[in-house]
Length: 190
Image 1 (cartoon, rainbow, N blue to C red):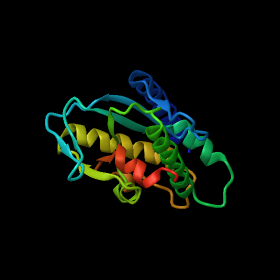
Image 2 (image 1 turned 30 degrees about the vertical axis):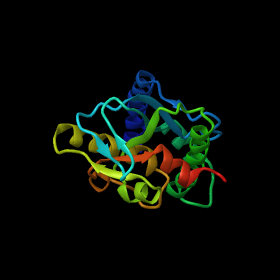
Image 3 (image 1 turned 90 degrees about the vertical axis):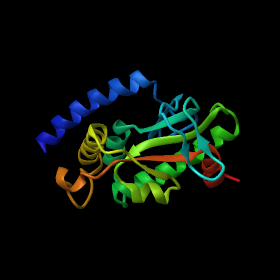
Image 4 (image 1 turned 180 degrees about the horizontal axis):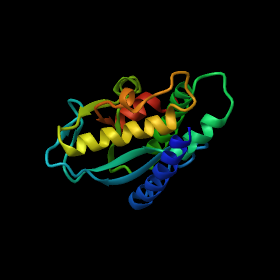
């Protein structure tokens, strides 16, 4: 376990620096503060079609989503009758509801067209309503797959019944996308 603690400290330092650099903050009004987000222009060269009516074009404002890995450790340390993965899913649904309300009431600027992140667990993202976009082969895909798998190994598996190994957690990463309208439709409280 000492190796995982050492890896966690390194990951926390890298994570803090990256989140500070991109300006990621918790969702306004969130009590859990598990999900962080930041805005920036969509920087791909080609447009991305999320549905028949939603097209993300280069330069459109999007929001990048990140987990607060520190919060995951805190949540994992809390006693619970459900495995950590399921508690995180429940909290994410709550966070998405708060984010949808922030979109609806204008706290999230209306020019933000969509939300996205990188994920190595596509089945869970799909269940939450995200569109999966495979990353092109190459160094960036390999690096993101390794980084996300290390995060999963270090943060998400330490409180689970099955202990993970890097070999078992190493999966191809996907960009996961959900449009602003779909987020509101799926998660806003009526």
